Image (cartoon, rainbow, N blue to C red; front, side, top):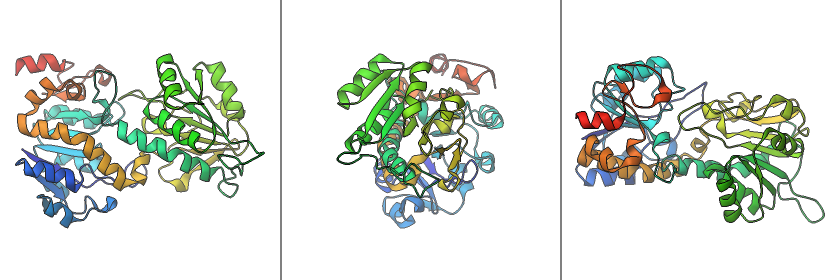
Length: 377
């Protein structure tokens, strides 16, 4: 099998994606098993991996994006291919990336189906315990970054922040932080904020998730989700963070504009759900930090793909998570790999011209389950 690693390019209004799907150490693991890896020139430069680093790991550095795509049996990326890359996708190829095809342009889905491409969404790979092993490291990184972002935006010299210190000091209370969503991202953010001395509230509709947060982050106040509870918390929050996600689909809007209007002047909203539409009604995509905006007196941070701000760490983390699946696909072929790796099978979006996830609607040859398609192979 030949694996291609194209260089990521700017997406959605100018965000520069600096991550790379595979680090040189991960490439070395693949090439040591006889897998040929093609890396587009400069693919790792955003994460400070040089072309020589990849050559030393056994990869072949190619000089065009087209070659990285067309020669590859399996293309592994971070982001969904952009329109200028679509023509490079070829018949019967495997595409492995954070695809979110339910929100991607419909012509891309039609092309993938027309060319019988096996597409695997990293965001949909899911274990029996409902965890997402490829999304999880990115969520952890975003959660750990949350206090860095919030602390800076609360400064009085940034977009009119409240001018308060997250952790407070003797005689002065700490910031009130409300986190909507108690999953991986939310719990990591809670732990990070709590470590700084903040008052932290985590809101979730899943009581088991709240119990887990209470155990992992002692001292966190957990609140069962309903609109009334959320409105009350928003009214006194210094930081309101949305960490809600529906894998592969648009995030529901949970924080209304009316709630935002009740928030303190100079408080901060961080909408980590913006990648999938946003959980805050007043959020709008801010491709870079230059576009952070103040609306109704509240600072909004809605920068997508936040882990790309720490691309070296993120690229290593993603590589570590995705490597076992790539080794299985390369060594066994996709049919055998997905047969004994059910979490990988759950990530399949399209196969042999069929959609295999019902949320993608009617397209191509229609809907067919992966299990049925495997039986037909």
